[in-house]
Image (cartoon, rainbow, N blue to C red; front, side):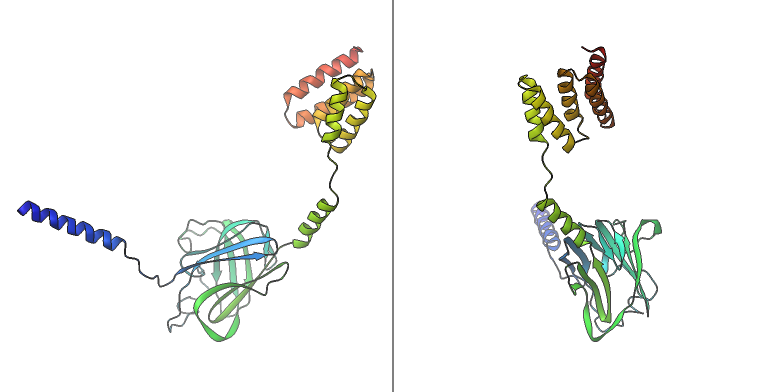
Length: 284
């Protein structure tokens, strides 16, 4: 009987423990993730949102002139898949911690490369900063109860990353070089580069079947003009020149092929070109 009571008590304690572990309560500073297209970039911000609850925020809850995690709990994270400028400071694509240093008349904004810290790093390393710049806060006519990060004033090139809490807001201009990317894409679409492969394949066929070496050379030359760094194309042209007994031309072309193959560390083509050059020099 005592054993049975002990087993029942153990079962009750286990059930109570499991039930407790499964209880979920609201977070005082819930996590939020916002996503926004800026120009051609995709930007995502993840942060925790504390509320004022009647407190004085800047200068008290958030001290002036001290680095802030820009939210609650873990540091705020921002990531983007294109190179962007933040208030004119260029930052490579990636993910960063977003830190701020609030001041009465000026804020400092920092993008930090180390994402492993909980909040602000205890051992802060300035060499890990991807960007640091100043912004001027603005006063709001109405108080914002819950800390908010939003994207505002969107344009074709970007927009503002706006931080708002209590009666203070800060705007960070986020932009990308849309024009050069779009113009390059338009140019590539409207003016596609000719494909060397049809000429190369035709030259190979004419050469391999001994059909017409002069035609093979014409096609190989066109392919080489389109891909002058392609050592396999140059090697084919050199072989055709050798077949036409243009030994001087074959040597010159094989030398170009060999140089390109060496740059690409392709020893097979280096060796093949050496053999072809030796044959051409011997007039064989």
